[in-house]
Image 1 (tube, helix red, strand yellow):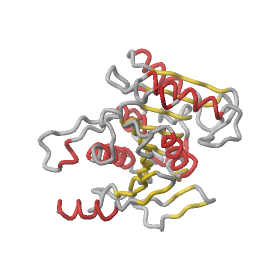
Image 2 (spheres, one colour; image 1 turned 90 degrees about the vertical axis):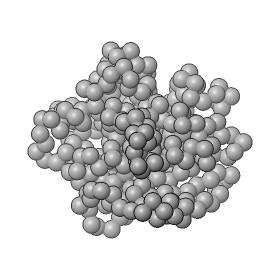
Image 3 (cartoon, rainbow, N blue to C red; image 1 turned 90 degrees about the horizontal axis):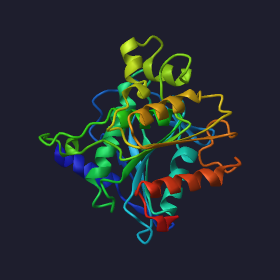
Image 4 (cartoon, helix red, strand yellow; image 1 turned 45 degrees about the horizontal axis):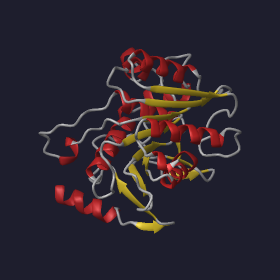
Length: 306
């Protein structure tokens, strides 16, 4: 079984160069995931950028040119209300930008939950294990692996940030020995809480179902689970976002601050929701500069990449 796993890993990771980069695709579960999300419809891309009907998880690895690489990596979780995934402007395009600054961008295609709440975080954890298992091969520092998330992808990312595991050194599966804790969290207009009146209702319903238990709501309300070991975070959103209430980011920032976890919060006056890598917002250059500065201040990347 393990031999089959690694053969599939090798076969699925045939790399091809694009603009001096290396791009490759890996399945998260070559032998099949333990739990199905119940989606049987064919995976499709709608409106040229939104992927839906995702029933098989994977990662798309975009490595920077060797001359630019600084050893840092970011696992990217696109948003889409847990119904779609904005795989391009909140995924591949962000990875391209990271590559320009020497950072490996790994886009996570997480299985949509379809009411199976544990599936997206299970996929995110597996992606972190795979990244660290391939760290030497991909010239990544295993202690410089951040997670980024947009909208509902921000919920995936922040869930990883508060519900990570440190790996089991006695596990028979070598992947399970790796920590899934991200070193930093980069959160863009994120869904954080599952509390009614504060969350994004569509994300809550798609993740937890129509009638979740109080325990399930609390578990996935990530502001409730911050502690002193939660990774540092930067949060960016718009004041006129009418999709995900601003209280999501504010409460998460407050929880981080209360636990003395380094955190920064930027609320831009305009932009609405879902801007990602779009350049039709007034602050598109500003947020990128702020993010680079923050990554430098956290010693995640060297100042020379600015």
